[in-house]
Length: 428
Image (cartoon, rainbow, N blue to C red; front, side, top):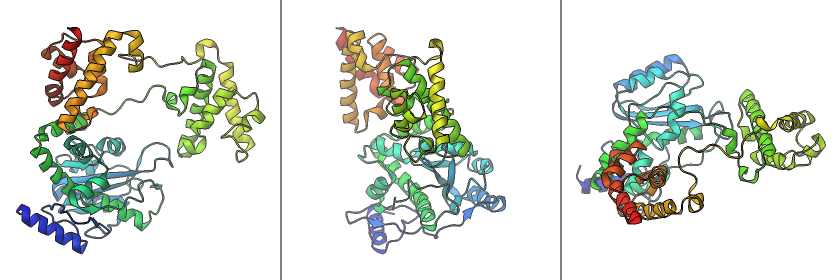
């Protein structure tokens, strides 16, 4: 199909409200068209092994990349498990799979292991997909591709509209996907989320190739696909919102006790921890150190809607923290591996602070020249580490240091020269 034919086809589709042709299409300058229905309608939800076996066979026989998405119930349920998995592939159509009814999708993952998976913001969905046995060996991340290509807005809806000329309805992104049965409008939304992913992938691949960034993107995608599962976060209670207000060790102990109590309750009830007790309430109790249930009930977040039994369990957590010995209390800050926070550099090492300032200026200028966000050009942590304990101020030494901190070859190639020059300028 020629460029003129693609434009004509896209224009016709947007007039009729249809879906893009299988061989692609490009948006013209007219108004974007709402995409209201999946091409083959809303598929049935797969929730038993017999139906799943049919889907596995169909997708194994399909061709080309497979679009993959997952819906979670963040804010409603404990953890980040998947409550719906959506797939689409040429020759197989769209499938909606219920991981509650089909909790083991490893056979489906195996059937698709040789295919390229197309996801939007892959790192958000891969953990919950891994839990049910779906792990890609190759992938294409349309959000990351958009960042590397310099798109100012990289949400799926914005990308589909800006690149393909269609409007996706996004009203159900934050609903409780653990609901059963799932309402038809939610299923329509879910099916449409994978409807155009492969079309978007094809268009972005062309744009990255035009900009000379396609190999860079492939290196990034390979790094995501080959990354091991994330290690559990140490002391997750320290991420409680408002922790910056809590400074005394006894108060930190209260935060820890309340957070851990809340987490056990949330896990047992399978609800979001925030629905059990808010972060703000935890911090309020830590700062106030209430002496009894009555004092606790007077604090924000522990109001009249909370029953006596609930108040007693929270007060018990506060009291446990009060009885801890000094050696049992948490330290004010976590041990930091690597350099200190940048705000402390000027006091700790003014020379290193000057190096960091010069390096940030150089990286910012390069990112602007390459038309991509700085954090995608090079991880800020890698820049900080190089500046805190600088290698020799030559390109080869800087390249080796960046590689040791996890920079991909394309990042080393682009960043090492400007970073070496910035360091050399500060040591002159």
